[in-house]
Length: 314
Image (cartoon, rainbow, N blue to C red; front, side, top):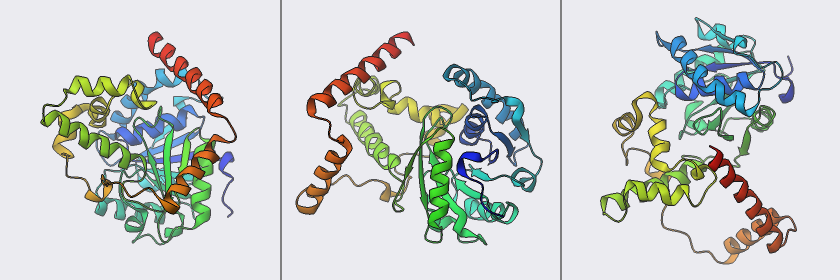
């Protein structure tokens, strides 16, 4: 059977109903999809329903797609039942490599042959996760940012055995589903946004430890300064929310600073000269798209005013 067009997908499956998995459920429901979900935890369905219910007012405020309804969600008793007939599967199990390897192989065995399967992993490469799958060519990374139902970013990249058409299809599907998809050209530990975020997080910890700045000063410096996301949520509160109901304590207990792969960050910069300098300059010119500095300043100021007004209203 041929793979359905990315913009014509009707039903998706979400495997794993934690903070990230339930966030994906809420997002897909709000975009008008029928969603089947599965989680092995005894309280998986109840937890998922609580998280979706909590997210729904924000999604209603943003505007629901035609036909969007929480009634389009069903929680299946088995993994096979959840993925049966789904054109797309989003796996969001805890980030433990052995668990991911076995679970993705199980999903691959149960899902329709034409379905594309994506993992919400925060750092593992698909090359190391697809080793037990019978059809690894349709497995991709679809890494979101928390909460997936509000933050539009999703980073898409395949492994060594992933077919390019699966990466292209997943990227197009995410875009059709209302996400901002970054299709990466190659695997890199931690992907793009996590590597940037990790570098800033480590520097914030160093500054607190050295007495150079307080937690409040660092968060204020970021929320009042750089970054669209950081305009309303600084790094400490962001990681606090990443801990789910346990908050920052859960985050620090389970993912203490320094426990992540050291390859995630590289704080010594390369020399910006020669071909690298040319690449950076040409990339900026291409992104500007013919707009002058004055044009870009006007556009920047207009958007900053809109953000500031929105924050005042909030």
